Image (cartoon, rainbow, N blue to C red; front, top):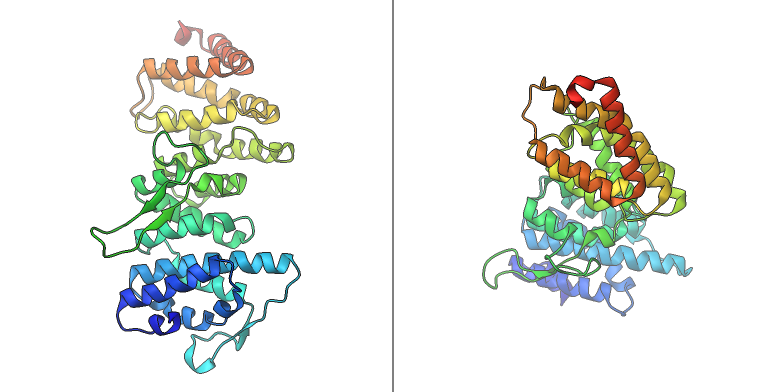
Length: 341
């Protein structure tokens, strides 16, 4: 029935056929039968109906997980055999994992439907550690999603437990589409790898400062604590982005988000991260004080109450933060006493 549905001329029937396969792939039934239909699924990669694309991403995600488990258990996963006359240049045989990643790479692109991409972000987040090739596009897509969509994936409905998913959504009015589960991706992704990918956005952009999307994702990626083996990498990441963070911390539109990111680094419960990033903040914090009180800036700045609130609230986060912020203020007093007064 699934195969017949996939080949039907009505898009809703094609969606139903793929949904059957996705359910089988995610369930307890042997998944090898579904793997054999990957060539037919690949042919649907060019289908322009958004729900067909969404179901292909869900199916690909479920099969990737089953393949990973099978290989970990030492089970044989047979290659996929393609009919050369009916494919887009695929080799005669492919490892099913590679075939599925090809399907994902065709559909999961920034220019795709926002609905499809929202489904893909939830479906692919658990695979970022195992298949790091997906990560750059994952972050690029997440940054380009509408703010409301992105926020649901990062934080979920207000009041939810941090590990709870956000629930099922329908992306069109009425009953013309299926319900799709939105998952809280911060509980699924590799935080350090995602944060590094956001940091690389600065190097790739003509504007060397993170905007609201990048700051929002970075704030969600910085953990409350991390493994000791990651300490140096988190501190190095902060070194990479600190110039952007302290620049935008004075921006009226970006100050709140930038302040959240800085404070998450400073208040990390892993001591090496908090002390390392506080130490790395001495120079850029002094520069921010000089720009703010020097009155020479050519750009709009936050008002003094917001700046002082950031310094005061950050000082209350930890004893070390209070010491370092006090030290920065003393250095500001010594270097520019006339501005300090």
